[in-house]
Image 1 (cartoon, rainbow, N blue to C red):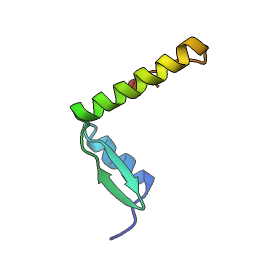
Image 2 (image 1 turned 60 degrees about the horizontal axis):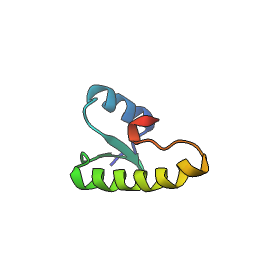
Image 3 (image 1 turned 180 degrees about the vertical axis):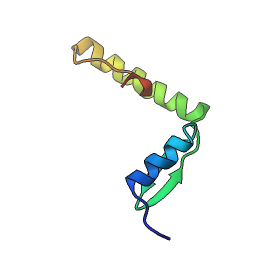
Image 4 (image 1 turned 135 degrees about the horizontal axis):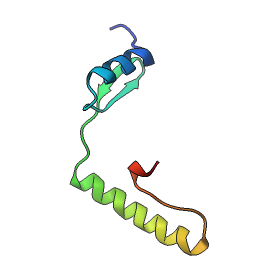
Length: 67
């Protein structure tokens, strides 16, 4: 199988913006959508981190869409 490039990934992603993809060792991998369990884990980690960061005034904590 030919090794694909970042340009190949960008082209495919532009054609299919609803799909999540990664380029790993020259192969484009289609990623599964996240579900309830992974979202629960993410929010728990963010909550614990925020509870530690906030009283120490170390910055801000956000979810994946927060930048």
